[in-house]
Amino acid sequence: MKNMIITISREFGSGGRTIGKQIANTLGIPCYDEEIINKIAHESGLDTNYIKETSEVSEHNWLLNAFSNHLYHGNNVQDYVWLIQCDIITKVANEGSCVIVGRCADYVLKDRSNVLKVFIHADIDFRAKRIVEVYGETDEKPLKRVKEKDKKRAAYYRYYTENDFGEIHNYDIALNSGNIGIDKCVDIIVDLYKHLNG
Image 1 (cartoon, rainbow, N blue to C red):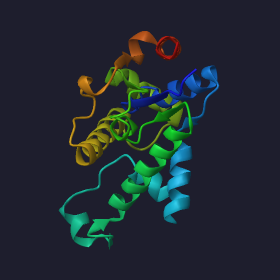
Image 2 (spheres, one colour; image 1 turned 90 degrees about the vertical axis):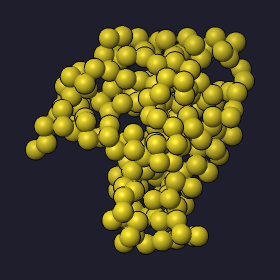
Image 3 (cartoon, rainbow, N blue to C red; image 1 turned 45 degrees about the vertical axis):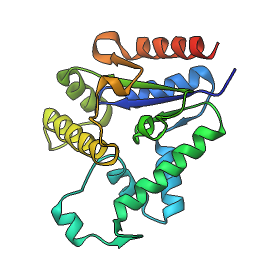
Image 4 (cartoon, one colour; image 1 turned 30 degrees about the vertical axis):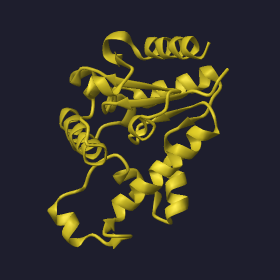
């Protein structure tokens, strides 16, 4: 089989991370999610929690740009993390077949022919219910949590890729996990991977 990369972009709470891990387990290939955060932290020397909080949500606004620490030709810390993230995604993609969850990997690897770009989405009520089940209760209402996370994730994607998050033309396939179900999404993507890799 040839090397093939599956990138999983996802709306918050849609189960994209779970789907990515199950696909990797089924196919016997690595899944990079938290692992990329750890690699970024190792290479940058920055705190893992900071990377986790900023590696998919945009904090670019006038206040941050005015007061953040600037590194390397005027880039702020988040821009520095982005450059390391792109380098790590490229490296793991070069190493062989794998699943990469989030981190704009679909954009970073957009010029490669061996990438299956997937977008997972679902109805907001399904996602709000699921984040309570998966992440637990917080002081913030579930619907608000979903909307805020989606907004930040979309802003981050737009800032670094100049594309719209969730725009169907950026992906090979989009699946509604709320209607189809998590396990069926896994089956569909695995079958497609095998078909493309056959």
